[in-house]
Length: 398
Image (cartoon, rainbow, N blue to C red; front, side, top):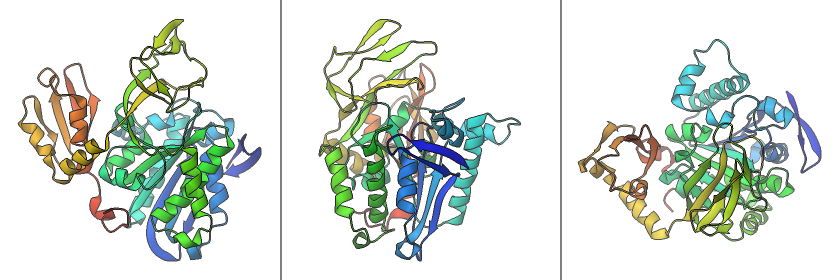
């Protein structure tokens, strides 16, 4: 049990790893909410506490799990103590976790969460939805981040907020990338700036919408459903496009990085815009695009991202290609072979495939992981997606 505070609400609460576990009176979906994976992001913790404390099992179909992330960091209002808990979920990290004799603070947290996740998976054969709440150091519209699988796209597009694809290519070891490799619907919701009241209220709205869209709650039983929907639509300034990350400024060890004040996520920027300082040297935008998650806190290795909107026609083409599993055609091109066909992993020789743009692989459903200057692996989320688990869900065939 740890004590945490919300500056937005000027309120203190005590929480344990399992914030709530509600078993509904009827069979239905399983919703697993995470909050506080970063210890200075408390909005989701308070939103889950506020919404679930009065929820009646009689109204609920299925089950809800609300899981607190980095408890020790939450108690100190720090992003992390020794390592970023949201960068530890590679298979290599998990394999090492079970064999280590001594664990650092975040690994102890991870070990508990990992065992809890395994227990949830083992206990349920119903559709499971994983939703991870976060906030940002900059001002932002509320938005969803997903690993680009069609089941994630379809479920996410019910919400009246922008969706951002491709973050898994730039971050190593996020929790949701691990869950997505297991084939489940999983999404992150960034609700606003860390200590703003809107960040808490946006999370609360997202919880109610998630429960209705999964049919865990009947829409008529949520008396303020339209208010919650309209809140997110208004907070998003009616932007519900799909964006893709095209660039990350990665902060190097010992680098003194500082964003210029005043930038906020989704703000349009021009090529040549002065964005930040690195060791007293100016950093300028190389793109006419939008800035995304500029860093205004001391902890964190991602200085800023650049995003661009994706034209709907490319989304349609991509869906067609994936539905008919045309990704198999890529192995007929020189320099490309299957590394693991069952798991949808391609090996690419970059010396041979220089003529292929990264966006081509994205359309086919692949996201890349660079291994060396000459080789990379491409991961196809569609090959592992548990489509049969969700095929009878109301949103699946829309």
